[in-house]
Length: 126
View 1 (tube, rainbow, N blue to C red):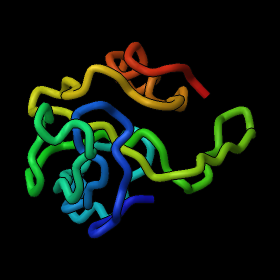
View 2 (view 1 turned 30 degrees about the vertical axis):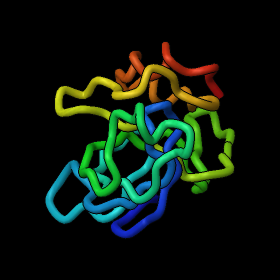
View 3 (view 1 turned 45 degrees about the vertical axis):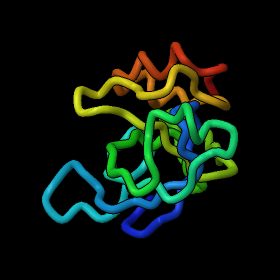
View 4 (view 1 turned 180 degrees about the vertical axis):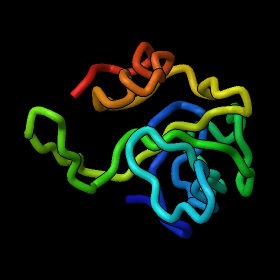
């Protein structure tokens, strides 16, 4: 579960490394974000190698898709899976990814929630 002031890793090559959640989108007084939810973030730290070629700036405000959470996720068949980190991928206003690659695996939940652009950019599905 992601909430306001949560520190997250960025799992794409947009240039940001660490971001902070500002707001959870998707309803009146919605507090927590889970897999596949959209949040508003602020860039806290950039990657060292890409500071000159970065698509984002430090302190910039963007939207992001939650692609990994430490919280346990239960599937309809009864199986549980847990991921190791809280991670997001940055998106623009239209919902398209800012980066051209997504690092690490994505859960199959994103495929069902109509985020096929992210699934095609990722390494694999879990």
